[in-house]
Length: 236
Ligand SMILES: C[S@@+](CC[C@H](N)C(=O)[O-])C[C@H]1O[C@@H](n2cnc3c(N)ncnc32)[C@H](O)[C@@H]1O
Image (tube, rainbow, N blue to C red; front, side, top):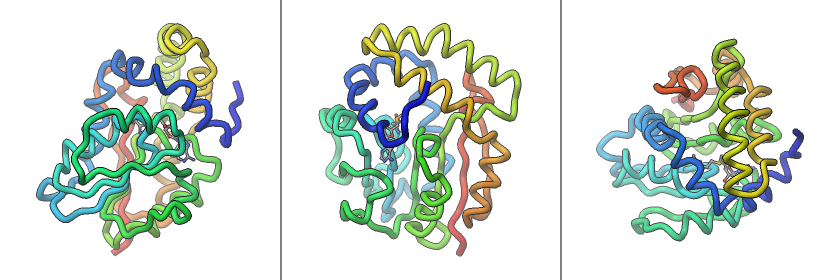
């Protein structure tokens, strides 16, 4: 199943109306996003902080950021108009702003740093040039600012790989087909996760792109050792 990186926002446009219903049936989806947002350790409920939600989709990751940093300013960016329309239909405080842009084109969209934190949930795996974008994220962070990447990564564990492929074949792909009428995005999801870095390789990738204090932790539930929070800091 190949989906060229440039076609992804279009595939998300098509899948947008069904997206929230699908992730709501995934036990732990929202809880795990919130856990990753907590792992950014925003002090004082985010008071005075400026945060970027990169690849915000329908706003699930934005809601997680808002829950842990209700006093922060949050800029939430996504390339898919369909996903953003779902996000915009929800109720948000005035401190949250949605912007349609490819993450690679933030400057052209008028979105610039410095940010105190960047949250990228289920985005980085989908980027054509992960290293350049990670360096760009680092440059957009204040010294000491935090990047949290919430992402599937299974290659370090045979068990995680087996569980992932079983859940995809038995649940994710059939439900995606049933709810959206097209399984392309969900077949892409399965393969993109199988191809993505293992957790150790991704931590190395963060370090190679200039992040310090790199760490990662997994979540609970069936996603244990499948979904991870990777955290790194821009050098002081
Ligand atoms: C799997 S969704 C995750 C959405 C949200 N972060 C969440 O946790 O529910 C991935 C999102 O990344 C967006 N995306 C993929 N590639 C992108 C890019 N190059 N620039 C901006 N958004 C992108 C897609 O449009 C999609 O909405």
